[in-house]
Image (tube, rainbow, N blue to C red; front, side, top):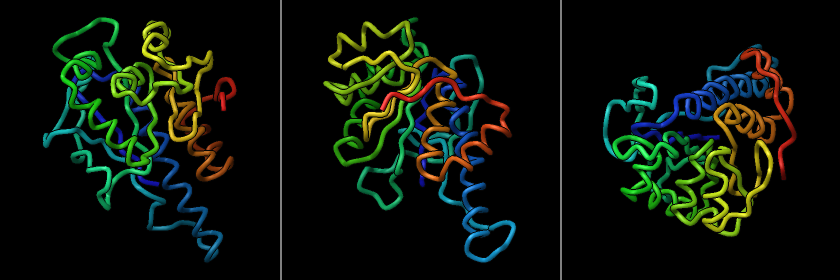
Length: 219
């Protein structure tokens, strides 16, 4: 499973970094399980996919909403490219503050991120949002008529945009996954890991990060 987490200036740190850590552990643990099953070995040099931070433009780093500078691994591929992600994760950040310089709101006004998200959605890429990342999906038209959730502060805006808002921490609507407030990104990522690699891998990740999953996912 290849995961790209789309970063921009003003994204909320935990929205992006939390899921990254979950997937980073999971790709190693899943590979170890495959090696055990096939050869009896205790570990594998291969990973069960990739997880990386990407941006729309060629740059070395982005600055998150609380000032953390995060390195970027590359640019988001075209949706039809060989290295296009199986899962594209979109963090939120600064939406309700209407920060015009660096935030999800600013990216919605610029339009480049929503256009990229729309293109990936149309090409069949599975997309997941954390917190107000779903508002960027709404701007792209991806959540129109779809079951979704966002941070409590933006729920009414999401509903007014045409989404069918669900009162849940994480909502699975097929090729569209959305999560509510900041820490719900951990639940979303662990849910995806369990679906892709099994309950054992998801439980192992939850144990190592000392996180107790909360609430059922609305499917």
